[in-house]
Image: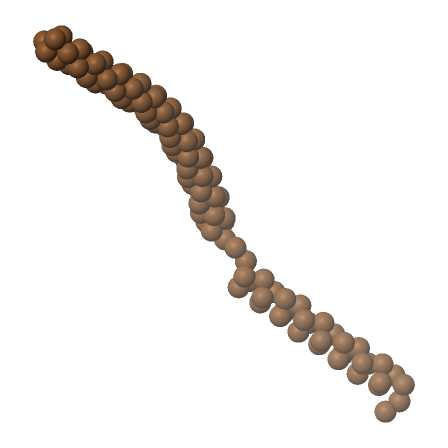
Length: 108
């Protein structure tokens, strides 16, 4: 094999390798290419996900506000209950003192 034949054989081999590489690249991109309908569906799903996250955030905010309101109402109710119980305790003590006073005056 002389020098010219070697150069031609090498060129043919390199060209065939290039053609096979290009064809393989084309095949791979042909199968993994995303269609426009898939891109549209992904955009729609992303928008729906975003809307769902906003709805979730609004629900969490509402629940936190409602919890704060209920906690406040519970605290007020507990304070009113404590004041009522204290008033009832004082009324019972006063009634007991009055009963004792009436018994002492009726005996004496």
